[in-house]
Image (cartoon, rainbow, N blue to C red; front, side):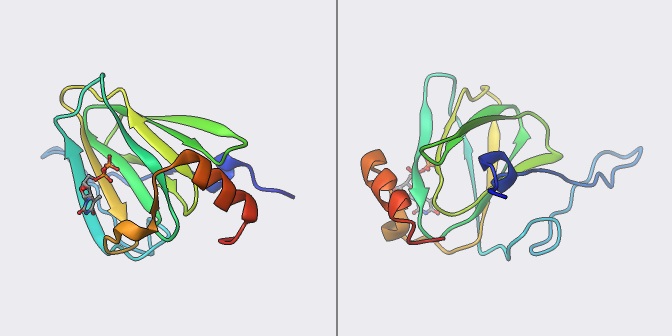
Length: 142
Ligand code: TYD
């Protein structure tokens, strides 16, 4: 049976190890997320007027977590589209290779943490949507 885009981009609920002293969330590569973490970056200081992302990655997988504030992620494979609201530090969304994503509607206090499976390589980014659709249709990365 064909996997839907939603199946391919699951929401991950992390375990809360918090107690009366506060919350604690732990993310270990290949345990709570399906890859070894090679890179971490975070986006803040964005707001409701900007759209970030707007690319697909030929090699990288990501998990996105709003550790503070909220944002939305629109994910498409050119056929289906899903929108995920990231609104709690205990949830993330897994983004596989070769899907197109936009991050937008950032709250002013948004800190969007991104865990990546690769070191940065600008050449694995596809930043042109038509080019993405053509590569996706040719199915080279399945
Ligand atoms: P960009 O990919 O536009 O950010 P986003 O997808 O989050 O909107 O990246 C902005 C700039 O930062 C661009 O010049 C590439 C650079 N960059 C790195 O050097 N390393 C990285 O890991 C990332 C994510 C970006």
